[in-house]
Every structure is written in C-alpha cells, then in structure tokens.
Length: 86
Image 1: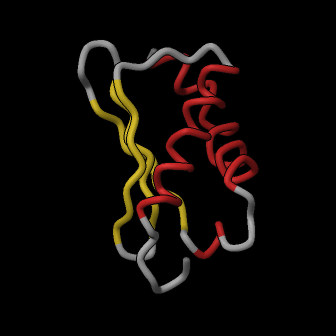
Image 2: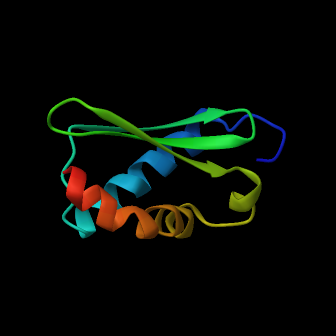
C-alpha cells in the first residue's frame, strides 16, 4: 500500500470490516467511509446529527496486516471516542 493507491476492492473490504467492528462494539453511526489521501488512509465517521469526523492512519503501518486485524487495530483505540459521538 505504501506509495501506491489502494484498489477499490481492498477499500470495500476494509469498509465492511470497519462496519463489523463497529457493530460488535455497539457503535451506532449514520454513515462510515474509507478513503485515501497520499500516504494516509482516512476513516470517515458520520454521526446521527450528520457531523463527519475524520480519523487518519498511515498506509505504511497497514502493510502486511489482514483486513480484519487492520480494522481492529485502527478502531480499538477510537471506541471510547466513537461511543461519545454515537
């Protein structure tokens, strides 16, 4: 993933994995999205009141991780904050 675009299929799988992690942790949301910006991947989280929050992480730190592990590693530290937003 480093220095190259992430293909749409991988972004779709990552999106689904993020949905699963959010559901497992009872985090409600209006919409979520996964996008990329240069060397970063972005997690876009829209609350019920339509406010969008963006969380960024490094593509380089994601190399070699399975999609499920990546979703867990990105979201686990955010769960307390997401609970407050949901």
